[in-house]
Length: 220
Image 1 (tube, rainbow, N blue to C red):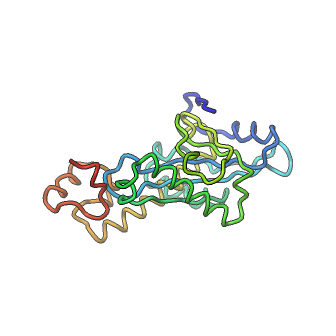
Image 2: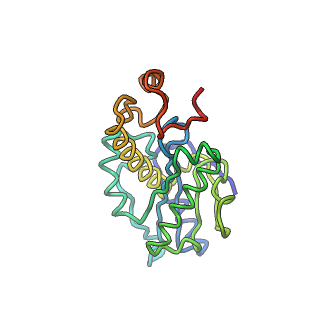
């Protein structure tokens, strides 16, 4: 099922409330980070919101929560622990080498599957959830071992609080990974560009060549 969100940049709990009204006990939001980077892994964040014990009383999400792309790095870092307090979540990764070997669409799905496996391992009943993937395409279902109730929504990261929370989780966690990678190879300036194709990044590739963190098939 593909739906489209409105133009508002501020998320709500309307989607979650509609799922709970249908009798579902859990909504899991999913969003990716690093899809267009030329170095580093792709990350997929998942966040779980449970139906309230008292209908209509969903606990409010952290003030200021938005799609991670609409937040400054400082704001994202401030929100991350509040998101963790609001609900359970995980982040799954697929490496640059795996992306080169099997492609980005597979990588997105596999990173999502890994995140969901970790969430399941923490006690969240993933199989009973409505799973909302941000975007038009369902890249998750093709890699699943067992079918899940997966839906998609264009602009879900802006409209749905649970997806926005997944977005913040993925972005903050992947940024940490890239800052750590920067410590080992600072000439690529990953602490600032996070593996995306900034001018200084390409200049460093021209001087130093590719590293194991680079998606070699993406760089000509």
